[in-house]
Amino acid sequence: MKRLTSLAALALLTVLLLTACGMKDKSYATSPSLRALIGTTIGNVAFRTGETPPAPKDPPADWELHFSLATFSHLENDQPSIQVVLQVRTHPGAGFEFWLLDGTGAVVARWSAGATTSYVGTVCFQLELARDGEAVPLGEGDHRAVVAFREFAGDVIAAREARVTGNPPRLDGETPAPNSPVYRDALACPKGS
Image (cartoon, rainbow, N blue to C red):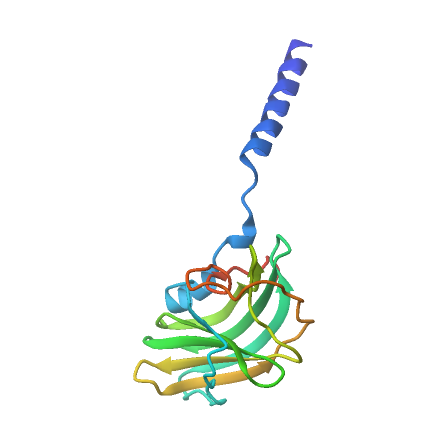
């Protein structure tokens, strides 16, 4: 009986410890595949700048770029996000860009960062769309996305465009501040994606 009481007390202590410490929110884990591709998961972000994204361009023979998926989604904590999946073969030294366009073709946001490594495989990441009173100014209509690799001299190596699937979330809030993690931090995709 004494052993049963000790086991019950240990189980209760474990539950209290886990509750007090809280479980780590997996929503904010960074994307390991994007980090492997470009060496970072923190992007340079600009909203509604009036820039023009690169036009689609086929990659050179020793590169591949298949833009598999861009969809409005949610992080595990139910925060709205956009999830992006690519299949690539890259070589060192190119910058990476992700452009989000609204239904009128205007640029909602540009995310750029890093320098590519030699990488072959799938890349999956999410960008959070809203948090703590800040929200990406999505606009109306069907959205499109452009993924591009660019030489640091400015020439586009490869670019692909895709329709963003899913329903755009209704977001309220101010445009994210320059140092905000909203849309800046490339987060991991859910397991099984």
